[in-house]
Image (cartoon, rainbow, N blue to C red; front, top):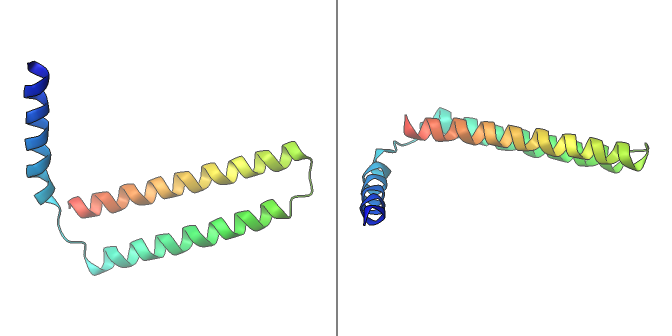
Length: 88
């Protein structure tokens, strides 16, 4: 019974909070576009470096993992910033 009450409270809270999002300003939209472009360029550069890797297989795999981790970090950081801008 408590679970249903908690579920109902969560549904109501989320439905009310969805109206709390504000419009993004033009500057924020341009920042999102800039971040997407930078991430795409970094990804292309990383893939080219991975393709040109001449080290051992282990070294190439390590480099690839570092690139993917860096790309994931950048994407997460940018999405968090975008979400913050939408809320504000």
